[in-house]
Length: 365
Ligand SMILES: *Cc1c(COP(=O)(O)O)cnc(C)c1O
Image (cartoon, rainbow, N blue to C red; front, side):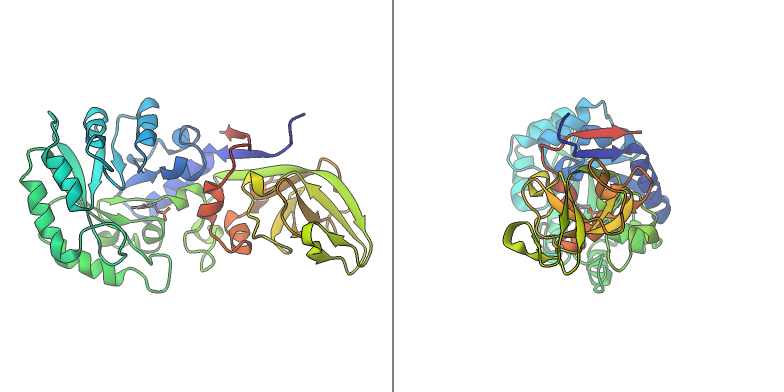
């Protein structure tokens, strides 16, 4: 028997979540963001669930090739654009739309030989200070692009730094609108949090929204809101089984560093899942986990291949009992990935992206 850990990708949940974003941002077209191998889910594994999107957004050229290899003929957007001049050849060959965020990328386009002019997304740095043209340089960049025979349509783009938090999007919206209000072209500005929280405002959802995390079933603004609030379903479940049981006496400790000490008799289960599977090592005693679909807690430290869980609420659990690290148990009970991430001091994004290669993955309808 193989080691019992298994990740499951839920096609129906992906469809459902995509629908939730559509409902939150009515009449906007939706990029399914599948960068980082579809946030760790696997591009090929999510394709069926997300093929109802209007396009796919990603940033690795090999990933764009994989999406085309799946037979996708619709739009693909490179969120960081070309990294070097020859990337534009692939854009021409595969008809990839690409972001232009700096003058060097315009220089590359200006000398690129193509029969088919490119559709580009001109990115403004409206305050995040990562990629994009400063507002006062944006229109000059637009004019430069507009003059190039290599460029067809120019769309307008920016990215929010605080769409999930108290600062919100108002300041960046104001900057973006002030500079672009009289420019032609489609607009895309909203990630998951902006689409869910502010997508009812036409200027925010604009022509395209770019949801990533929400389609994978994690609440972008957790813990302010959870997946139940947004009606999102986990697209990934990570499950394993109990492979050992120990009966602790008061004063007994568990695991490396003896970080947990039993203060009463305690039955614990040893689960075949550790940080080498992508389970965060920063999670410690108290992190929620489902055993047989029932919520309990982890105790002690995460080791490379194992964690230990409190079986107090589960007198019948033992060798072979199903353990859900995140996602949906076979009973239907759900442990949102956001809760586990929070216990480990991180976000759901990181956990799903970090699912280790050694974990086998299946796709369920
Ligand atoms: C990753 C990314 C997104 C998606 O963000 P989520 O928070 O996962 O919805 C949208 N736009 C850009 C430019 C991105 O890099």
